[in-house]
Length: 474
Image 1 (cartoon, helix red, strand yellow):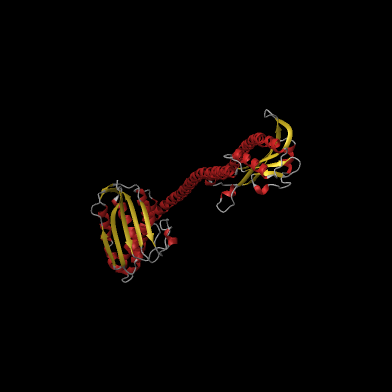
Image 2: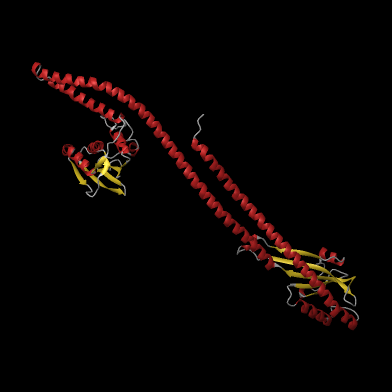
């Protein structure tokens, strides 16, 4: 069983991705829990302090009302009857004077004998029955207690939501006092103190929202950075895996070509000598046929031509199989190009191909093997001629490709190369022609590679072809 190394390398980063998403989920849940804990703790502290405040206020109110209202009213009227306007107005004046400037929404006093409101700073509540509930009954038993009426959560932060509502209602027994201001166990009624904590609760909810939003922004930023790092690492790993696959492919190709080269070298050497003998024999026969059988010497000429073609193929095989070791010296690249174009001039004239030379005369000499590059130029020029059987234009130009590179371009307006064939043109023995070995462009690539350069091809079917050679200038 074969396992792809790239898959093994990618697994840790897939695990990192899993942990990054899991961490984000954990962080978000933790943020929500933390915000809830903080807001809940703050709310509890607020309620405890508000309840303590209400109880202190109620005790003070108990003392003031008893001293300033109950005692004087009993002395003057003999009994307390709040339905009497003067008594009610006096009690109201005392209560409002005490609550002035205090954070109190309303104060109500219940009768001790029945669950009815005898007095309230909210006139509409006076006389209301059975509104005290269980809290009223606990207060009658001497126990201070409170109830919270709250309607507020994170949804109330949105503009279209209803306002936050929070009211704390505290019930405190209204006790009779002794002469020195000490309270007794005699309960004369129940004092209800209502506080509006809506603004405080809204502030807590806003704090909760700020915590959540801030945490999400911070965690989101950290997650984005982590994702960027993971994505970049993924790209690097994938690029390295792709490079590894490419190198492995090149290694396999090199091994295959090395074995093929050995075979070609062996076979070519075995063919070359007999081929030379056949050619020599054919040349001798040609001379004899002229005298013995005039008119038949063309048969020997055919043998000579075909052996010459076979010899050319064998030499091409040997050139491909032979290790290339360029013998570099400083040469002006334009000179070799001009020489190759002059050599191909008869072919250009034969196929009515117009050649334009655009050579950069400012180029300095560069290290190259002039003989090997001459073969490169001829191969590409021959391909250009074959691509324009009905004539056309061919431009040969040189230029600088950068600080340390020289560019050589061959641009023709011939038949072009189909996209599916473009990827294979440098493959040894690949050809779409009826004649030829398919080694020409493979040899071109080998020579350019041996110079530390590269070959680039741009073409489209019916739109011409550009061969670009990039060579180092030092």
